[in-house]
Image 1 (cartoon, rainbow, N blue to C red):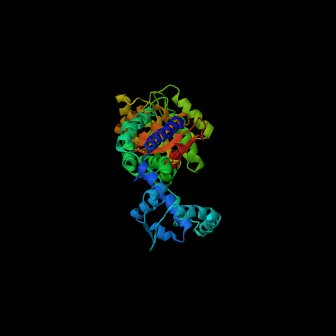
Image 2 (image 1 turned 60 degrees about the vertical axis):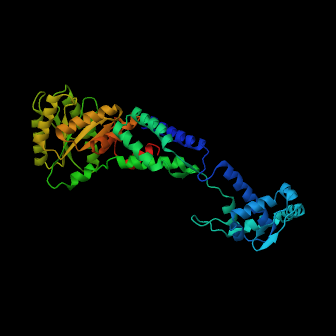
Image 3 (image 1 turned 180 degrees about the vertical axis):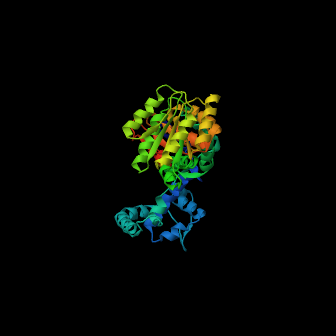
Length: 422
């Protein structure tokens, strides 16, 4: 699941980061600043190594003193006019001989300084959060980049198209882009952490978008007066009847008994299909003849459950297109008669944005409470699962992942994001 969307999101993130890096922008510094900074660092290292000046004194040098040090270290400058400068409280008049002495001392003390550096490093705290030692502070350079609004606008449109191509609804894609822009544009981010920052932000946004599901088994157990009635609806060919059998099997493993209501009296062989599932799972089916009133089938199944102390009634209904008004009215009647505790829409994960329109129509007709997406194992895009819950404000309860009765898993937001690769 999510193969294509996962790969494209990764590529998009890398492209945005690469674009930001190509600017070679280091926050608070220009190329000239970096060059000057490197010179200062070299001079400070020489003075430190060739004298008894303490590190803290070196750190207190003002900009003017550093400039004088640089001038003093230049043979050409010394030849033209010797420069006096201050270090601490003493005054020096550097010349060529002095520079040669410094170079000589550097060579002689190099080995001793290296040993001292090792000793100082060993004294530094090893755990995170502690301040770095002098040598580390002096030589470290934390480069940062900033993603501008103009850059994000270009790559934001690319992200929008990427999401739409992978079955993410337009309004969901727009929300993702808006929130991502708010979180990363104009903010200073460590260069090495930009990609991770973007991925973590996307992860948080998606988790926030997805509706938190509830546990059906817990809902059934909490109801005092049994049976707990669940009505399933959806269009033809989505695997609705097989999904009902999977749910019955899932509940059975949790110690919850159920009876199936064959209220699809419209489609040929629908009753035989549900009976076949019931035989394999050792479940009872309540059915009438084809063409009979499906609401009456649901009513009889509920009465059977009450009489036989069965925990749950699972009502199968005829698959119908969301545009078929007469069939939707029939569904309204079934819902009105059976008074279900839960109304579940069953759709395909691979249908894309069509699923959203279907769910909206069924929600308008009977007010659905949850969603099950079948064929999630063959969905390489993943956008439907990301969109349907947010658009309808209804939770995804289960994902169908195959034909076997065990091939259904409770929907988990965090696991969904992990499989998305974020």
